[in-house]
Length: 220
Image (tube, rainbow, N blue to C red):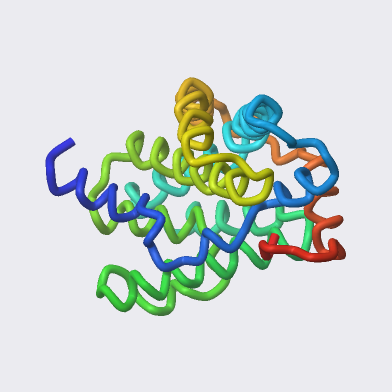
């Protein structure tokens, strides 16, 4: 990857990207509240399972297909996978999260003259990110790794704030997730369409419990 593409990728993966990722925990706050995640070891097990059972088989796999559709200029396939991802959100919070973040990123792309404003409507975050990757000419495999790393980093930061963990423990946890991130990336790229799955009832339940949880720091 050349320097320009690397710098573009670092910008897209940066926590400072103004899409609001820091305000969501995707049910992790409830997992902590209910005692399922209480320490670095349980956090690592929880996040590794998420990477294996959710990110690899659905979020990452759909993102990979959105990247391919952008690269091929296949708008019909792009819209189909965007619609499928939106339909897979089992709770109001999970749908609102991806729509809000997708809108924010799509609006940013429009403000930077990288994509038309019309693309902002009903755009999930993976779709908006795929458009950004295509516009900035970032290699797809590296973009998928960055997407999985950004998700992992955000989850680790939620653990640091809410368990709570120390900063060193958080960085140690993020390092420990590297093999799981690499495995999730490889699996997401290799899965055929008929093996994709968004089946994650435990995550859906945590998300729905979060909607009525008292004293929340996060929006999901």
